[in-house]
Image (cartoon, rainbow, N blue to C red; front, side, top):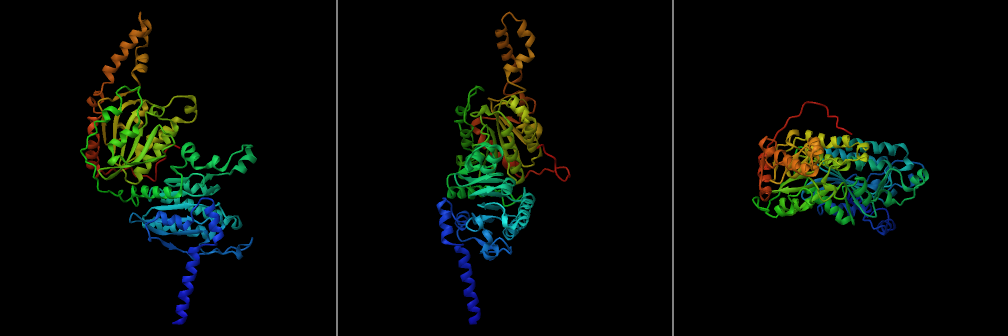
Length: 517
């Protein structure tokens, strides 16, 4: 009995050592950088007291280069599961205090195991990244560990939500795993992502740049589009991760969690008549329109600072989660360009994968013209959005607020590519192009031969508008299901989504499609 008690005491002492970490000095160095420890981060992410650690006593077996003399518990990564808002979430967190969070064979094996558990259990996976890449002392074994992570990221894609939280440096191959996940969070000043660091960049190209300038949170959230969210501190960042998880299902076989809604379904919004000018040349902020329609005006915008001419957001209507894709007239007049097409296509695919209905708010004058756009592959990138919508089987509702011109109208979930319901406000203008451009093409000869070309052009524009662009032209031809009062938009959307909740769509049997890249 005494021997058993001694063994139990030894176990508790080891567990205390595991929780304490490598040394107080290492912890102080972590805090000096403005960073929390791996366990503190897990505590902020998960519901209090819910964390269950897996393989806390794991140690590496590598020898050489001094590794045999340093075999800390956890091997630099903490893995396990817990709860977020009462629902199971799997997590792994690099411990920068141990080998700089670098990935070795044992470290990778722990991550592989927790990823396999998340996939089997059908629960989200959150990675808290703060590591220095592959553990050089372990050579190719470390690189193979990354390969196993990438393979599991791909296998889990569209099956369980995967969220990467960047809380420190992430270089080389380590950057690819976050890029394969559904969402990437970053913290300003302390987290960076790049394939090659500033020293290598300078040696190869001669360019001088800081780590943050090369791959910091602001760069990736506003310029490259690699990061979906950027925050000033870890606490806010992890709280927003919890909020995002509250809007996502556990896996692709479930629906997102519904909540009780206290915002009246039949709440009218007369202010919408003032927010959106009837004049198509006048700008307005689509964010204000969204706030008037959704529950309590609350939503989570994805890629808020990248490709700002389109808005992608998760929100709720009558307590049910929906995804919103909306043109933003306040940025580039709401045109579609390469980045906006990529941003919205990925969002549509994510919503479709996780059973989130899509509401599309249209006010789009077309695709952005220009040599740079054409040479950059606007055709190929625009086709990504077209493919994503055509491939989506979740409930899809489109609403035309004002302009809907040309190919951009078709691409933005028109009825012709499979929208379940299409509505329009009385201010809508659906056409191949704007009236001025159309008149110049159709009536070019009459205008050129007229005694007063400008007067003739004005008359032809009015004629084109009255004949082909009046608000009920599309409705008369069945291309719009109804023209609705803007004030009743919320009620119409909620009623329509309720009807579509049991929608079932079959796709042709195939291994997978071949979307444009």
